[in-house]
Image (cartoon, rainbow, N blue to C red; front, side, top):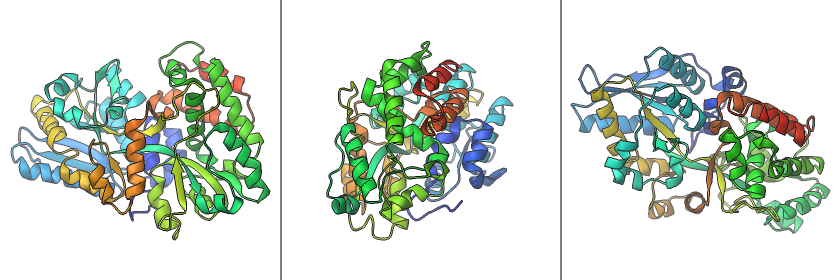
Length: 452
């Protein structure tokens, strides 16, 4: 896989989204990012009683930012050291699962929250951090409130939110819209009206890397929300019987297939992969008018798209409202943050070191600047002035505003669900987009894995 490092790793979305999936899915989605073991380690903690261990992911520039945070902490705390080891994405997920099962996990468990975190909680493998946050309200209060949803299980916080926020965005090619003489959609009806106008000009209305499946999932996330509100998916997440058969869910599933049948997506979308960035290329070359994708794609389009971004040809907005829908049009989906948990079997000294790192090393002023410098938005409130000085100021401020004012910031479904539920979901989404199953069949198949 060709990893673009001039700004942001273009495959970081899969770093986030594949965390909750089983080995077959990982092999299919991120095989090219493979690796069978750690790529780097630093044992600066030595044998000090307060030394803690921390595993995290490779790929620059994110790896360097994580490494710098540990090294700054170790320099400032000679009696409380952290030894770190870095892993490639798929190797980490295999290693951490094995280590936790064997009782040999690192002090700090790097993760994605949601369904995987819940499985750790159910097995008693991570500590409840709620009392610590209660004792340190300043740590919690400076972070985006939306970041705590995937860190929370049954009303208790089991992980420290970290790093950056990455909402899903509706991108569009301004030049294409000008050439066709149309405006960006403000409603679902507008989207359907635009489809024949772009097709008549030989332009795909929407780019889509459908072979990756999770890109198709974004459409369902927003349509479920816009039609019926966040409570529709929440019912399935909470294990309510036949939740996927909710009339609002069937309506949303039907709308997706209506768009497919209207040739709303680029021809052959089921064979296009997101990891190759081919879907992005269709947008910036003008072969497609729009693309629903994560904020992480911005840097890649800046790097690979010539003057597409620098000359203001890239437009972006939130997903539009659905006429008659119950959902708040400010709602969004994506990655609210990354998450750090405390291994329950670590020593008290190791846990104290980790908690001090959470309070002073994670999202320090130095790290905040580093995240902004690579074109991302850290999950810290009040950074607007810093964002405004970035070369990507307009986009970063848009992401900040979208993320902090959303009525609800939903976690990507394949993170929120259990590994079994996530794989069944992705398989049925692919079949739905291929028109090989009906909305009712999709719902029946998903109802069978509720609570599993």
